[in-house]
Length: 406
Image 1 (cartoon, rainbow, N blue to C red):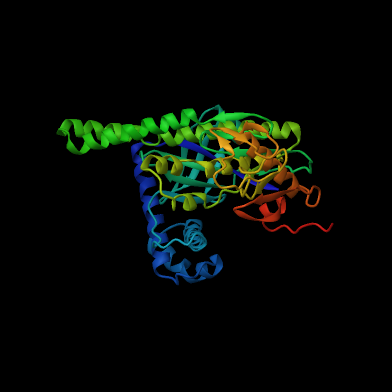
Image 2 (cartoon, helix red, strand yellow; image 1 turned 90 degrees about the vertical axis):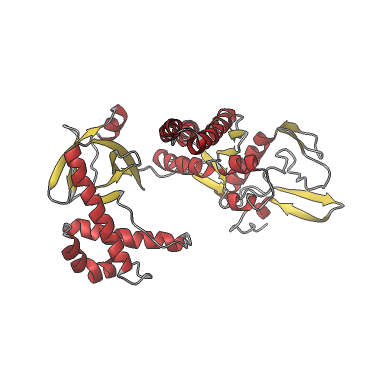
C-alpha cells in the first residue's frame, strides 16, 4: 500500500527571486482560468482537455510543456472536486501555487536546495528547514511538489514522498475512541484527553477578536492601525494550537494501537455539523460546536494508521451514547435521563460510570463486530410505554452489513 506524505519546507527567497516566482504564479493561475473559461464546464478528462487546450495555452502564456500540462490537470481536478462536493460557486484560480513533477523539480539532500523551473529559467533555492524535515527527506526520492505562497508573503515548497505502508494486520483487539468537546478523546481502555485547555483558548481568542475588531473600527487612527497589526499577528494561532493538540493525541493513540497490535474504531461523524446547526442554540454554543476540529482529528488519525499498519474502522454513531456497555440496554425512555453530568447511569442493570468511557466501549464492540462480521451477536430488549416494544440489535446500528445466518 502506498501512502503519500507531504513535507512543507520554507524557501529562502530574495526580493529579485520573489518577483520571478510571483510572475510564475500569476501566469500559471491565468492559464488555469483561461482553460476553465474556454472549455466545456462538464469536461473533466485530462487527456481530452490536453488535446483540446495544450497548443493554445502553450502559445498564449509561454509556459513550459510540463507546467502547461499541470495547469490543465489542475482545472480538471478542481472541476471533479466541485462536482463531488456540490459547490455552487464558479471556479476561480488565484496566484498562490504551482504544481511540479520530476521533470521540473529536483531535491538535493546534501546541500538542501531545490531546483524549480520558473517562468524564464530553472532556479536553485535554499531550504530553511529543521532536523524534523531533514530526517524525513534524507534518503527519500521525491517526484512531485507544489510551490505555494502563504498569506504572510512567505514561500514554501510542499514536497510529496511516496511511502510503502505495511498492510494492516488482522486482529481481534479493537480500541474504541469516543470523540467530544468536554473530553477530546476517551478510549475504551480508560484513557482520556481533556478539552478544557482548547475551550479556554477558543474563548480567549474569541474575546480578543471582538475587542480588536471594535477598536479597529471605532478607535483613533493610530489605535486602529495597531489593532489591525495585532489581528494579523494573532491570525491562525488558535488553529495551530488545535492542530498541535490533535497531532499529539493521534500520535499517542496510533503508537499504543501498534504496540498492542489492535485496530482503532471511531464514530463516523460525517455531516454532524449540518445536523446540529438545525437545532436552536445560543451563539456561543454554535461557535464552540462549529470550531470542533473532529474531521481534522480523523484525517490525522487516518494517515498515521496507514503508515503504522493499524486498521481504522468507522462505525455508525447511532445509540453509542444511550447504550449500556454492560447489559446492552438502550435508554430511550422519555423523562428518565441516563446521564448525570459526565456520568452514565443504567436504569436496567445499575452500572454507573463515565459516559464517554461507556460510549468508547460501545464503539469498540461495534468495531469488533465490523472487523469480524458474524463473530459476535449483541442485542438488547427495548421496552417502554413511549415506544413500541421490539428487538433492537447491534446490527441496527450498522449500515451496509447483513445479519449473519443463525
